Length: 82
Image (cartoon, rainbow, N blue to C red; front, side):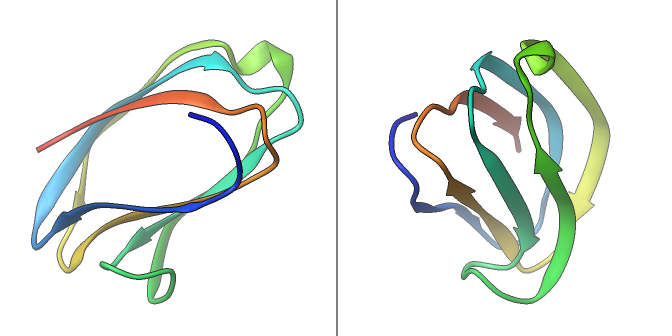
């Protein structure tokens, strides 16, 4: 949560299970299959207040790593992955 940043969540392969949003006001983010803010994009999401709640990602696979780059300063999100 908090200000815009690059978040490296995992090095290596895994899967995203879900995203849980507590606050999404004025934010967006990009999910990369990488351990840096580059490479294959898993998803680009611009959020709105209606995004609050849980989004199921149905075990979306990634191979290189998991990196999320956020913009805006109001995002409060939990990422469930393995």
